[in-house]
Amino acid sequence: MKQSTFMIFKPDSIEGNHVQPIIERIFNAGLEISHFKAVIATPELIEQHYAHIADKPFFKAIEDFMVKGPLYIAILTGEDAVNTWRGLMGATNPEAAEQGTIRGDFGYVKNGQVFNMVHGSDSTDNAKREIELWYGKDVTID
Ligand code: UDP
Ligand code: MG
Image (cartoon, rainbow, N blue to C red; front, side, top):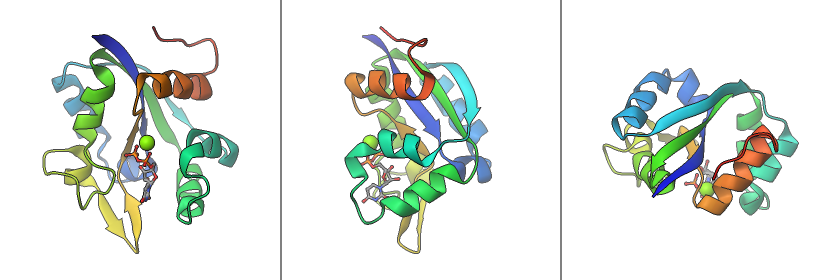
């Protein structure tokens, strides 16, 4: 089914010059990229986006990391977009992510902190929630 999902290029993907190869993988998977823009996030926005991990011990480091420079955000649209993008991303922990996935190929763990390059919504409900959170009510998906 054609659907949309939300993605973030986290600062590690931008600093590591991985944006172009990641975009190539997105196109090669048949997904369209729209609403691409650079954003400087506030701690409040990151807390809302990552509400499900905001009470974890590692959250402060993630929050600091996500607000320290620009992020690129985008909407991906295509067949089964949520799962297609999650498949391209690979597992959360780069050390567990398979080779050939973005996190498996570009991600790493340093001093116990996970650097996994990209975000992707994990369900269509969360895609809707995250798109409204990051773009406001003017941008909606089906
Ligand atoms: N995260 C982490 N350690 C963990 C779990 C999560 O550093 O044990 C970070 C990581 O950056 C991850 C984000 O928190 O991408 C959100 O966690 P989630 O479980 O939603 O993983 P994702 O959906 O990004 O695969
Ligand atoms: Mg998640």
